[in-house]
Image (cartoon, rainbow, N blue to C red):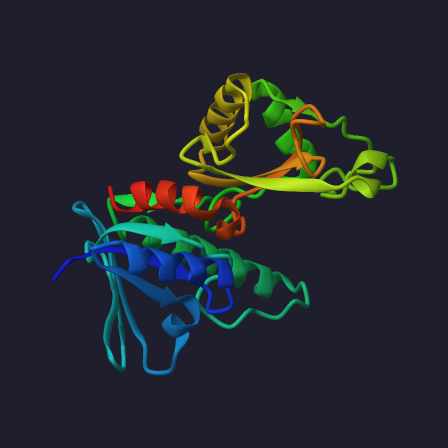
Length: 250
C-alpha cells in the first residue's frame, strides 16, 4: 500500500522524531519514519536509475525495501549528511571530492522520492540552503524585514556566521517557525507576515527557523538576525504541527 508520507531524518534528530510521533497520533493517514543511518546498514543495496523517464531509486535493507521512488506522496526531508559514515576530516583532495560526490548523489535520489518534498536538497545543503548570517540579513532586507546591522572586522572570514555586533553577543533572541511562508506566531503584524512570505519565496525553503532579536520580537521591532533550514520543529507547538500536517499530507 502506498504510504501517504515519511519523515527522513537522522536518528538523533529529536525534533523530527517529535514531529513524526505527533503526526502519527493525529493523522488517519499513514506516516513513516526512516532514519538516515539505517540506509548505510550492512547488507543494504542501492539501485539508482536515471534515464529519459526520469530518476528512480530503490534502497533494500535486510528487512525489506526501505526507500523507493513513488512509495510516498510526500517527504519531510531533514537530511544533514549523506547516509554513510562521514569521510575523514583530514582535508585531503580525495576526501573532499568523495564528500562532494556523496552529497550530489544524495541530493539526486532525494529529489526522485515523492511529488511533495518539504525542504528540497540544494548544492548548499541537503535539506535546504544554508547561508551565512550576512546573507540571511541581505535576504531579509530584500523581503522587506528589518534586520540587525551586520558588523565584522577584517580578521573575520566573509562567511563567518557569528555577528560581531553587541546585539548578538549580549541580547536574548527568539526563533520562530515559518512553514510554507506562514509565520507561526499569533501576534505578528501583517507587514511582518507578508515579508516572511517573501523571504520564504526568496530562500526557496518550505520550513525555516527565523531568529529575531529579543525574547519577544515585537518589543525589539521584529529585527531579523538569521535563519536556518533545519529548525526545531517543536517550536511551533500545535499551530506549527497543524501547518506541517497540511503541507505533508495535502
